Length: 158
Length: 158
DNA sequence: GTTCCTGCAAAGGTTTTGCACCATA
DNA sequence: TATGGTGCAAAACCTTTGCAGGAAC
Image 1 (cartoon, chains in turn orange, blue, cyan, red):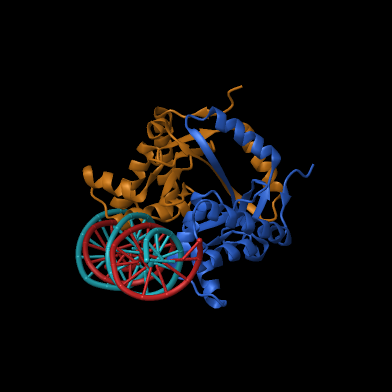
Image 2 (image 1 turned 90 degrees about the vertical axis):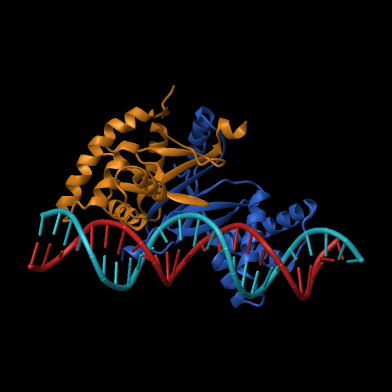
């Protein structure tokens, strides 16, 4: 009865490559150029599989070979969000995280540790069924939904 | 088959009174005093039924008869959250909202309009069942969960 | 009277914006 | 070469913190 499955890191990485390709196509077909900063953010996001905040991305790029201004990271992420390529995930008291929206569209959600901010994605078929039922009955036209479990990871509980 | 129900505003207001009483009791039994700012926030929250952010509360109090510093509003809300009387609700790109946790403990979630920020609470029995199943299988000890539907209200769609 | 609460102002952290320069198409 | 992307710095924004004065118990 294990309909809920946690995702391994390697799996995200595999589809991340596909996402980068799809994102590049979408960008250029929407009339956007492939600038240095934008490309760097795109590739790092793809290899990380999302789940990172803007400042961490900027930091990693700065530590790596290509340095990118923080403002450009925000601009890139903002554009990607507008194009439906990433999704903003808000956490109270923490910087906004950005999550890939994968081409195949396997939808997922997150379990967040309130102690250290560690995030684990999960997906659940039953949950999605219930959510779409609720969406149909809602008084708004519903575009998306966001489900977050808050808890404490083993390390922080120690 | 209407297991999902939207709540009217009047209904929240009725239970809001009870919440204020319960909150006052909890505060004093926990050794906190009933200062002016704290009481004002408490009463306004009760009459509004939650779903407001710190700055809006401060503004409304300033417009009304009792003026309260923004910092005190944050302090009051923070304390209420620690005591389990309110819940923080994060929304990407918007200030954190605070939501009453009602004495009877009827758990609920929100539908948010991305255009104007209008928020409508809802509760769904099936959703809660699914969420508790997921919580049990989660790799963290799960304390709470947060479900938000994002969409566009009729007014903003017009 | 002591302790806690409050308001103001300043600091902290995140995200956005203005502008001059540079790269892409 | 024309347009749009980038980096830096400054601003805007939300939230927290320090401190002196005032209120609750």
